[in-house]
Structures are given as C-alpha cells and as structure tokens.
Image (tube, rainbow, N blue to C red; front, side):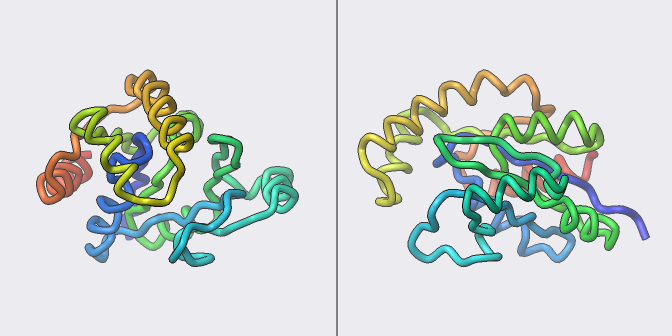
Length: 183
C-alpha cells in the first residue's frame, strides 16, 4: 500500500481553512489530524473532533514525551500535532491534512521535507475582517489582534510551495485537490 501524503494547510484566522478542510475530508482518501491545544473550546467544538483540549501542564507533558511532531504558541495558547495519529493514517494510505499555523508549519517542513505546503489567503484584508466579525466568536480586541497576526503570517508565505486565494469555495477545493494530485 502506498503511504499517504502529508498536507500542511496554513493561513490567517478567518481565511477559511476549516471550511476548506471540511470539504477535502469528504473524499475518503483524506483525513484531518486533530490538534491539541490549551485554548478554551468555542461553542459547538467537541473534544477529539475539533481539538484535544489540554491544560498547559498536560500540553507540556506531550512535549516532554516527544508525542508531538510540532507545536507552537499562538496568541497565548499552545497548539500541537500528535505524531502517532499522523503516522498511523499515512501508513494506512490516507492523505493527512494538518491545519496549522505558520511556525508549526515551518517545523513540519523541517522534519518532513516531503510535506505538501499550502498557504490559504483571503481575497483581501477587508474580507478577512468581515469573516472574523461574522463568526461572532471574538471581541473587537481579539479581532484586531488576529488581523495584526495575519499581517505577520503573510511574511511566512515563502515557506510554502503553493498559495491559494480562497475567494470561491469550490474553486479553492478543486485547486487544492489538483495540487495534491500533482505532488
């Protein structure tokens, strides 16, 4: 059986990563890696489905036991990718999608040079702001911080082989499918 691909999808908060990943995993050849985080769950998020929600102490134990392929701090919270799930799924022939931020993505690329690196962009900063406000999950201060962080994240785009502007969901998903098929 052919080993599955490792796909890294990054982009600013509000660029549509979660929606795009949701469409990609409708194809049985794809699965998404569930990340661990120290941030609090948002309404509707479920343990083991959206994230593995950890205390800071639990997260540090994962780091100390080398149970994460990558981890990073983002806006005061830790995020990381459990390694066993990723390797098990790839060995089953599944293409594993990591929806992670830019520092974690760079760490993945360093450890897994065969990873397909894709950066998802919003059509514009004003659209990004509208999307963040439309979620209704963050305060104006948090939105301001996410927009500032988005500007910083854009400086990492050179670490990615591919970038896709998420202006139309179907076009974006088809473009990413074609990138993965071509790798």
